[in-house]
Image 1 (cartoon, rainbow, N blue to C red):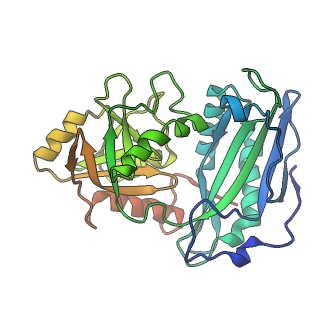
Image 2: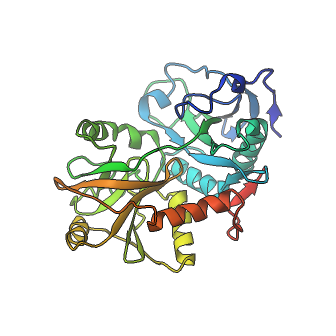
Length: 348
């Protein structure tokens, strides 16, 4: 049972849907649940406010932080759905296990999200292409110094309105010096350290005129893995190619969805290692090649330029590109325009 304290006033009245930056404006409520003495305490939803914590909290020093990124949509008939919360739940717990943090029960995770979205669904306008980004996260809160596994944690869920994450096709640089993750590491977990470690090389790429980097394998730097906030997919000759999952690649929910849609559309799907030289050879052959990022935030983000080993190549991004057909099919399912035969949409 979740204790709910409703906000007396909504921040939505001062929010401009036509001009906003993603991730800045929270919605009106936050879900909080503490873990101590070996068990989860009673969760509560209350008006959004800052979290009070000790400067000695272990999460601030030793990296025990895990998060998820999910979305809720208003369908064309007005109903609100949460997209694939069951898969997000499983991935969240997989990340928690890797970071030696306590698992969250399904009722707390999914029912907590449903209750929160019910309170915040008025943030989803009827007509605009706005969705609700949902951020569950957990942090270690035991107040002490010293490298150890925390005995206390805080599980939270916050929401924020979201439009287009990337409004234009992106420019990417293949990174062959710095490493995001290595086999056996935490690359498959959504933990804060993965993102913090990526900031410096990503910032250097931005200085050079690129939006993000594409990471390569830590051992040889010969195979692509993923981009900073996205999995990577490639279309060549009606084949959808994407790097095979490993302990250094995040199991993307959007990636999984696009793969299933592509199979049902009759495409050949190849989950395998993708070598840089293979991409170079395909570009030099003159073939039409599509490259795009896939992720909860970006959905599908076309790549208009990719720098491989110092040479820029220009993937196909015209309106008839296959990636846009895949994106449309996914959006139609989410918005209720196509049948959801996969049971991906969970109604609140």
